[in-house]
Length: 110
Length: 118
Image (cartoon, rainbow over all chains, first blue to last red; front, side, top):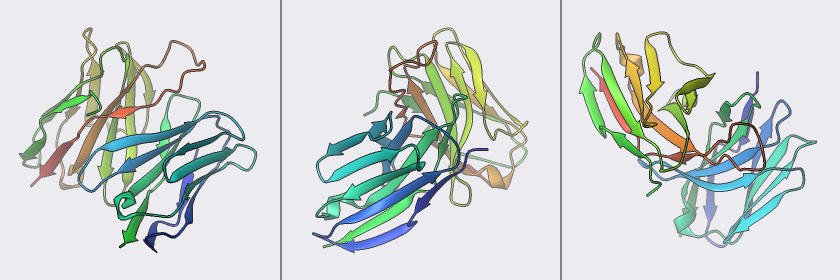
């Protein structure tokens, strides 16, 4: 059964700093997603990564995928308070199921 | 606004009761997914429908059932409710072609239904 592990689960960082969230998954998959969830709100799609070596960037967030290592990273550059949210990675099992990680709660201190 | 609508927003009911949650996907999306989000279990995939047919099942209890109608809206039925069923229930939709291809299958999430079982 596919397992998706994120770390850290909680991250408190200062504005202006850089940090990386890691997402490991246990079996082969060629589709990985990153979502953002604000408290009490729904999930918003950030990135879809479809192939080995894929890299996507939007603003201060950059996501990458290494299918051989079964690892995706979400890198935050020069964090700002507005990035405070919970970030989920999710992986397609190949059987039309999507398995989500536990989420990383990010708090950016002003 | 993702374009996915869910009703009701909040639902408070008692143990043993039955409720129905409704979801309308984005225009043009054929797939509907249901998820349960709770503090202890995280975000759990329940079930997926594609163009009216069940396509994948996750951690869905036997007390729960779902269907997708010809107009593509979907309903999630929860019966014999227990305290532990209290959670946020999300519906998501995606295009999902009939076979896997170059599409992204990005899922667009609705605002959720918060279910409280007392």
